[in-house]
Amino acid sequence: MRSALQTSVLQQRQAFVQSDGEHTEQLVFIAMANLLRLILSVAEKAANVARVCRQEAPLFELLVQEKTGADKNKKFVQDFKTLADVVIQEMIRHDVCAQFPELNGFIYGEESNKFENGLGESVNVTVCAKQEDTMTLLAKVLDGDGTAASLLAEAIHQNLQLRDELAEKLQLPLKPEDLAIWIDPIDGTSQYIEGKEREIAVEEFCPSGLPCALVLIGVYLRATGEPVMGVINQPFTRKDSTGKKWQGRYFWGVSYEDINICSFTPCQRPMGKNPDSLSVVLSSSEKQEVKDTLSQLCDGQLTYASGAGYKILCVIQGLVDMYVLSEGSTYKWDSCAPHAILRAFGGGICDLSQCLSAVRNGNKDLRAELTYNNPCAGCQGAEQWANKGGLVAYLDSAVLARVVEALAKKI
Image (tube, rainbow, N blue to C red):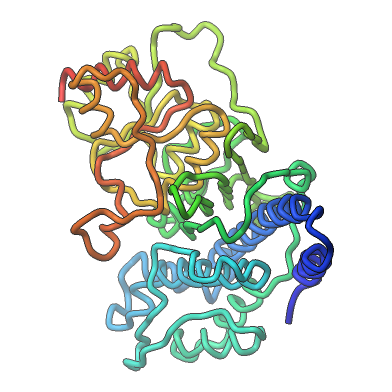
């Protein structure tokens, strides 16, 4: 059964297809505005699923069991974080393809949807047309836990339509059949599972905890791999007036040719800060020589945070100047959505290894932006989609050049 939004959009598109060719461009504009609107809505549904898993006792108990390692002989308990990821991933895929069938087969994510329950039965997790059928399937995965399955199915089939006036005005000359999507259903899963609660203000930095867990949906061009649309949903930022239920916020950006649109403005550099000093966010496990080099550019003050997506979000928000990672430990699903948003502000995400090579070879033109359509040669499984050369996320190309030149001399 289609939602009212899906039916309305399909009727609009059919009406234009049946009219003469002069409406083709308008059809394209409508499609892109509706695609962004849909992605915003499914990202909010995903955030609701993530919140439900923490707010409802039957699901929260499973999280606690995964966290403590109890009941280890039941794979669904050990891998509950993966199940939560897959449920969200499959929900997004289902909802987007229902409205945009051109994207069927071109929506990718981190997780396999195949599970083995505590009885040794193999189950493929999918979202069914009817809520009761989804509940039945999830109950099978969850060894007959009907309460948990019902709560998840209800959140998955919620008819949510998020409205964003700016998104609905989007005019982008792209067709759905030219696009593909990367999903990271819960980026920062360890922070989500651990569940350290902390409320944050709009422009507040959070080194760890629930605010670091994000839903990421990035859209890119199939032909070139260029990221063109990104949505980040941050499910856990503050609690409602009752102090019991979490609320979140979202960010989006679009960048294609000379069109650059964002849902927000980055915060300004604090007054009185040394203009020559940079702020860089890193992983605490970053190589010591990288830390030492960057520390000299940051007045000895380095910033650390959890979650690749959240660290890039800190750059997007203007909370830091740059995110540097020297290892190939992030993946296309981590970076695609925030990359598109950074591009809308004139920034980007580059392959650090390629940037360093360019500087060492005397090339000052650092054009090593990550792309999202081609797997790494010779790699299998998830590793074929790794950002193998590390990455550097930036808003200001001058800052990018300064950091890369410093690192090229030291590492």
